Image (tube, rainbow, N blue to C red; front, side, top):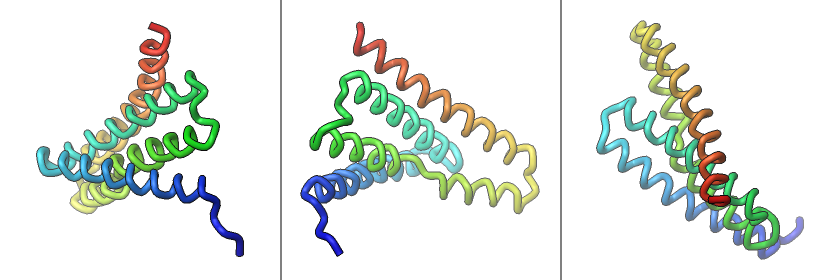
Length: 133
C-alpha cells in the first residue's frame, strides 16, 4: 500500500469542504422551497456552477498544476456535486411513479435533465464571455 501524496490529500480536503458548502446550500434551498422545487433548483444551480467552473478553469488553463487541480476538484466534485442531488431527484421521481402521477414524473424528469444540461452549457458560455469581455 502506498502513501497518499500531499496533492491527493489536499484534493480530498477541498472536495470535502466543497461538498459541505454545496450540501449546506442544497439544504437551505430545500427549507426555502417545497419538494420537488428545491431539488430542481439545487440540481440546476449545481449544473450551472459546474459549467462556470469548467469554463473558467479551461480558459485560464487553471485545471493543471497542483493548486489548480485542488481548486478544480473542490469546486466541481465537491461544491457542484454537493449542491446537486440526484438521489433526492430519484426518490421524488419514485414517489411520483408510486402514486401513479405518470405525467408529472415524466415532465419533472425531462425538464430537470434538459435544463440541467442547458445550465451547464450556458455556464461554460458565460465563463467565456466574462473571460474575454
